[in-house]
Image (tube, rainbow, N blue to C red; front, side, top):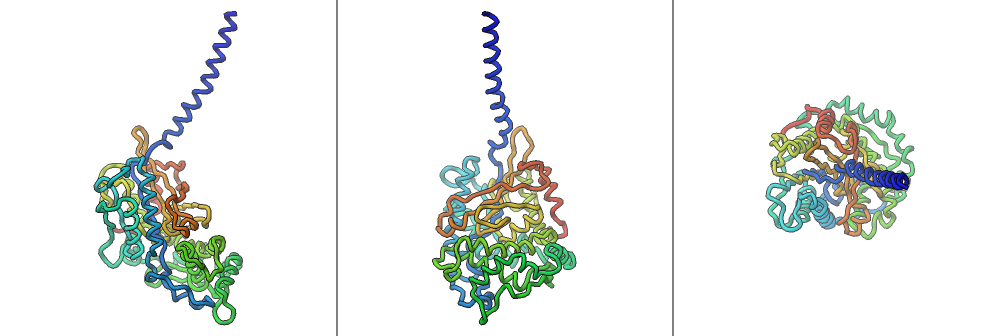
Length: 420
């Protein structure tokens, strides 16, 4: 009888151990998942804008393109409202980390916003602040000259090697650019159908595409048919996101936008994500992003960033090309439902989170976040989506700070890095 009781007790002990030990192991394994970021840097595209050059596509459409209520390339009222909602989202999301308070203004010097000199980027910065910290005296910082080398370093910091740039681009798509029309026939056909050209205007699919080096910067870029096709596709996306009642003269819905945006994604990949072009254009920006994260990790002022040492949340407001350069340099990839791979919709952002656990090595996590096209169209962007982004060269999604620094250093070309 005594031995029987001992067996029961032994089995109970085993059962308790089986139930409890895995829970402890799981908790230990997920300690880093429960941590809060010490510092966050957001590299964002501006919000919804009007077409930058509305007259350039007139030759490819059978009807006049619609008029916009703002100047070419300016942030629209819908775009400003959506970016204010994005700002409110960032505040809510990072309250639990102590970066933003539940009420009132953030601590002085804890929020920093830097924007390119375009109206749409400056206005986007102001809209984000209105959502994150209204009436708190935070202002959008920006360059004081005619250009900001953080976003447009060439040719001031150096001229790209046109031979290498052309090789990088031509090597990515082959020697015959017209093969792109065959490979993307479905998207071209849909775009041609929407534009409605027959005999009175040019069908975009029949316009030759060329790859040419810019004489000023040395960078190879896309011209001709694919350039026009990518721009037209994005103009339809902007009409849709801005809530226009009739998009593409009534022929374009959300599914059509996604389909023709293959051509815009292709164009931007060729121009900004091919490795040489990305490094020439993006090294200055990435170098200063790395310096900013290092400063937050070490707690010591880094002369290569304008973000104050007290900063907890920094935003850099740039363009779709700003995000594409990062993708090309760091070999990043992301996908969100309703978009193309590595798509960079208005307000879309790469989010760098720095974690500094008390008894572990500091590490970086990277995410991509964006409002969906339907959220933008409805004017309801309070709840963007976000997806994790892996940084090649890191051992996991959690990238130790030393490894992250090494990846950034390998990706950047010091010949195109200047002061910020």
